[in-house]
Length: 435
Image 1 (cartoon, helix red, strand yellow):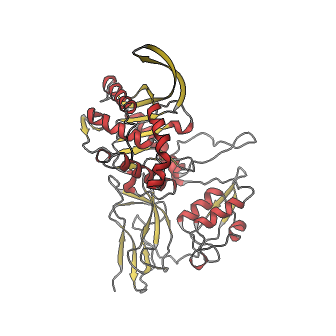
Image 2 (tube, rainbow, N blue to C red):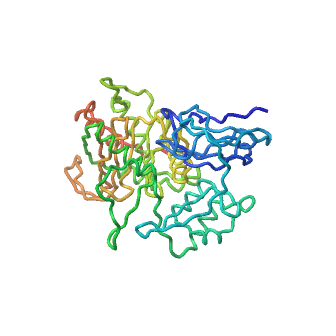
Image 3 (cartoon, helix red, strand yellow):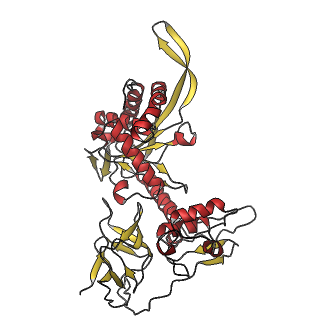
């Protein structure tokens, strides 16, 4: 039977290539249908690629850290266990034969600065397979070989699962300091006359791959767009009191919490309908106004990095629908379950800096969008209230909104008017509704 060509699939809008992070299966190993073959990374998200058939890995055409175009053949699988060739061609077509290497042991080394460096292979020395997610946790938490041997795997064939590792970490007294060298990060850093040296007063931590990509994206955005920021103050009292009144019944009825985020998204969508040029991008000398309204939600991950899942077709959803989708995306982000489709296609981004008890912020535009809004901390303050009987001072729940926008196509009138309109919609929120 002919070998099956495993190609790099389309992984989301505008994604044309991916980097091979690791091969879970090696040449000569049997693989089941839907079992993970390898882990790849795009400029948006990491993904595990499953095998569409059962067979044996007969050929691997790209090595770790090599970049592959969508649609290219990355490996060949011999169906029904009929093994094929074991040569591993390189990307530069310099073919050479190589034996299937034994899986390396879980290595520990001390670098020149005295830091512990961990290298975690796809399998342990005793043959137990480690999934990419488990290996990532092991590296991140600095679990040593001796510690790993003490973890009892509850998965099939004694395989260590995510819950096994997390349970071990709860009982662990002292974590090992982990430095993860990254070839991509090192190659991207500018050359320096001398490498920094660690001392008793400093600690050197290399960026992981995601942090490196975030850094590059932020620098690119500032170089691309002249950033301007506007601010408004919003009285959130009506919304705060409404949420407090219905949050318990909502959770009982729908099995999930209601946060302020979907309310912010609803107000943004209403304002975009009145100011559609905020929902745009720039292509040369042309302004591309998007008909779809897809709102990105900047989400902080447990490791401190940031990712932006996207609420698709936000203008076609009511508050309940927005709540369900926002909660689903945030949960997937925090559990590393986002797909490339979940983070592509955004037309406008929301960042809630109030989560970190910040009063306001000036976020960087998420290219190729032209604006990003930040919501600050909701804080009780005495404010002047205008009434028919005259001015009075009252305690209100107040919040600052900020908008960073691309001054190439969004001027102060458009940016300021849009932001003020978002504030208007929030203050006019219908607190009699029940969802």
